[in-house]
Length: 81
Image (cartoon, rainbow, N blue to C red; front, side, top):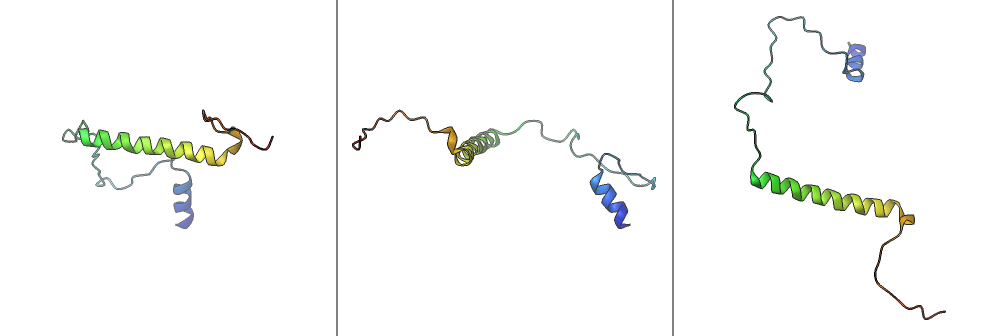
């Protein structure tokens, strides 16, 4: 039984054998009563989350790759030369 569970977990492409003819399921993703559109608040929230994820990705790349450098328009004078 444990080997069968391990095979089922490692190979989801095989599929499930249905031996019980009374076993049925309902798909909740393509039912007609499902909402087809998202609300304005959900769209704004999703946009804010994606903006946060983009900024976090930029910070992670900056932290992990310091050799890339920083683009800066600030000028400074070196007093030691």
